[in-house]
Image 1 (cartoon, helix red, strand yellow):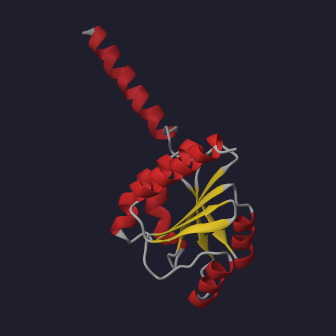
Image 2 (cartoon, helix red, strand yellow):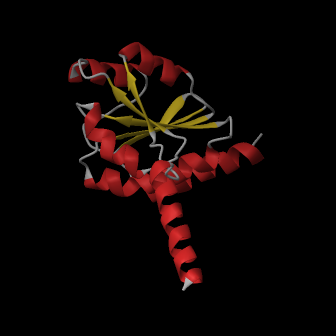
Length: 173
């Protein structure tokens, strides 16, 4: 009986600790950008840069997100590959649930400040080599500064293409 009571006490204590100090409690970081802030993010392109444009309400975008984060995590420490995740949601609060869902992920979700007009966002995308056509998810891939993909693609194909570019870059030097 005493052993059973001690076991229950230990389980209770562990549960209390988990409530006070939850594991994996920090959400993915949301970074609000001005137009100049976006230009700064885009100016820091790597040899291979993937720009993933999405909205929180898009079913295909949400289904693609785990694969996108997996790709980003794979190359996170590599100085030749950069993944930029850009939301076109009108309010950053729309992203809260998505940010909480992907706990302890080192990626950032960039979103434009709420007072920036769609026209200004479209101009900023265009001026930075992104030929956004209004469909989401939208993928732009830059290879050595040149946009080589600029359209709507299935995320698995994008992963395979990024891996191919990466392997080609290693062996093609």
